[in-house]
Length: 269
Image 1 (tube, rainbow, N blue to C red):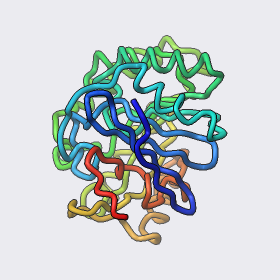
Image 2 (spheres, rainbow, N blue to C red):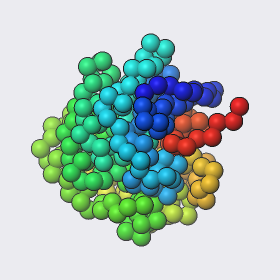
Image 3 (cartoon, one colour):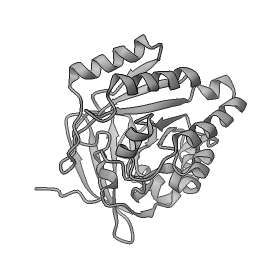
């Protein structure tokens, strides 16, 4: 694997890599300390809002390829942590992702992972991996909303069952490493009814909710909520008794923000 191009915004740096067999993946260095890396070429989940899955899954990355996204940059950048939250679904490549986590940990890095929980067997492996934080991307609670968001069936009841079984055996310190991720999409999952269901779920599992703002993507008709609506959703969940965090400005940057990484970026000179 090699770096073939880098792009820069006032907040983030995006790196485009080429694999030995000619595929391209991307990583983003943000907040001046963390590198968000990809785990697959494309993505099998194909969320409706996400550029990463627009072309489906081409292949999974080996642990060495996931690690190389860091090792190729470590002399150039002050990387303190890695987020396996770029292109791909980590649960669909769990064995290689777990190996990559172990490689990152040997470097003294903090490692976080984001996953939809699909497929379940892979999700179970990730929960037990030596990560420093795992975000479960729910994005919708009701069946109707989830069918609009996910390109494949990600059965929330099975994800929650696996999570509950794991947390029952986990220490209190380990439990704190888990949270729910929820990306607000206007007219899709931002209703008070859906947020109330999210709040109920978060209270049941004593989970923090990372409430994310949507980065609109060219070619995808979905829209994000306004700043006022975003704040209203945050305050609504707080009133529901939920611990909530918001997307920082790095995650909302047009270059490398959530859902914007792709395997087919057209770079204009």
